[in-house]
Image 1: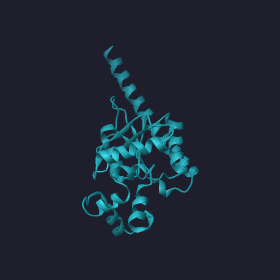
Image 2: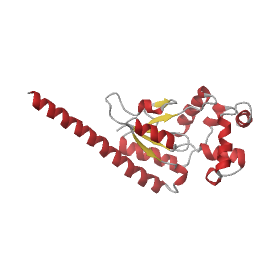
Image 3: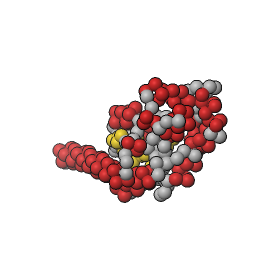
Image 4: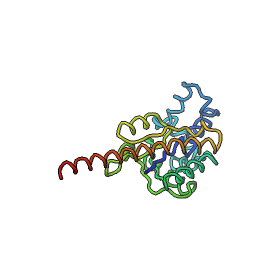
Length: 206
């Protein structure tokens, strides 16, 4: 079972960093209007975005310096490694400056994630890796409903998770263990069904 982890909102505390930097509030306490206000930094290149990222040393440094969720981030990685044997990263680069954001994320990964990921994908269309080369579904753990929906539509297995909605490492481990075990059973079930199908076809031909 191959598991991809998102970064922003799952491993790195992006939304709180932006909300505190712009409005002095935690993201979960923002109104919908305030949340929309914070999103402007990703599209208003010459206005809010320019001022915000200059304050943080540029796009690369901003992403490289994002805080983790502390023990919760470590618990995510540890649990996935324990169940799946390893993990990969699948993160969408920021459209404001894709190259700089990817460079910052790579630096962040090197500083904070141990063990290191087996693979890193920085792609806008995450569904490119929803299945492997044999058509077997891969697993994505992500906080963004848009990516969850697209991944499932592409034939992958997606687990929606917002780390800031969990209060302890035990909650993280319990949630991910349950979801990943279910994903593993689903993948194994699909494999068995396909193998049975092949065997049935071969038996008819022989």
